[in-house]
Length: 164
Image (cartoon, rainbow, N blue to C red; front, side, top):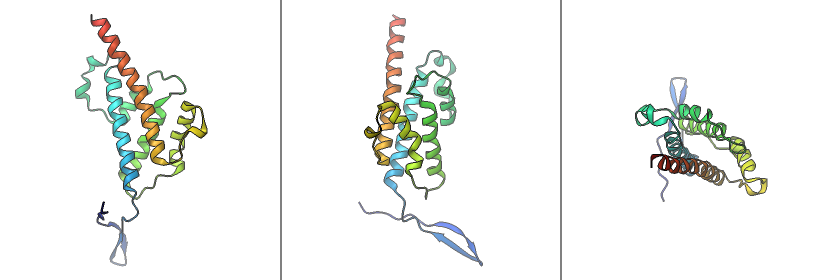
């Protein structure tokens, strides 16, 4: 696919002239993948919270909560170790905000360290966690969504049994 350049950013002003920052080194693939992972995790968080006992009375669909507010809500729930999801999801949100507000941001190994450490605890093995940023994001998103899907499924079955 042909790479389509975006207009340059205004870099600043020097001696009455505008300087321009070209956007030639953006890793659109990793940027898009990180944003997609964030959206998918938010989708699961929405359903995870909506199926939690007591939430239907709050008008969940109309609440329009921010991602940070959703993290705060799940942060009040008990997550057994090693699946303490809220701090790591919060970290993913920090990365997403960094990319969302500065298109020149690069994703580094250090950026992914909290996510990697979480995965090492969950998978019980340093050698089983990949090093590639997209593979780390993929594995993290899979673990988070699988955990939340199990809670959603459990509560759906529980609700069905109690309504019969």
